[in-house]
Amino acid sequence: MKVLIFCFLWGATCASDLCLMLSPAEEAALAHAEDHARKNGGRAKNPGTLRLDGIIYSHEKSWTIWLNGRSIKAGEPTDMLRILNVTPSYVEIVWNPKPDQRHQICLKPNEVFQQTDTFP
Image (cartoon, rainbow, N blue to C red; front, side, top):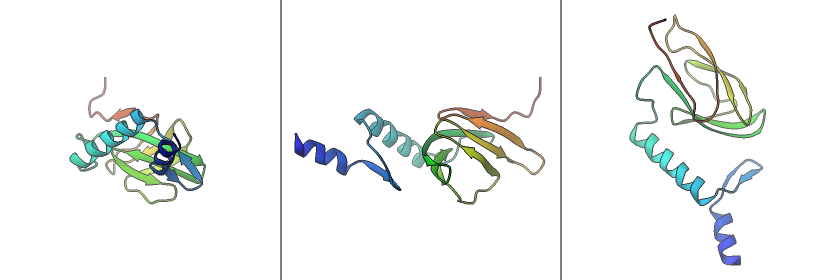
């Protein structure tokens, strides 16, 4: 039993002072998402799509989010978007996909914002 616990802890993902222990199903889902992002070049298939893949949150100045398969850490510069707020359950973003377009959106993990050029 001690050997299994040691192996599980050894394979855990650690970020800063926060250490996350993932279940086998969570590890498999993370590996699948990483493989999918690598195959797609870390980009959404539609350039008008913004997808929040996940959030790891320690505190307001220590977090990592994944947008369209790309990781973004607190304080890291980003193109076309400004991160307004990150919480453990959602992210608020201002996204400028084109110079004449501006979208202020709030996404939870696994949610997708789809830009459309037509209006009802």
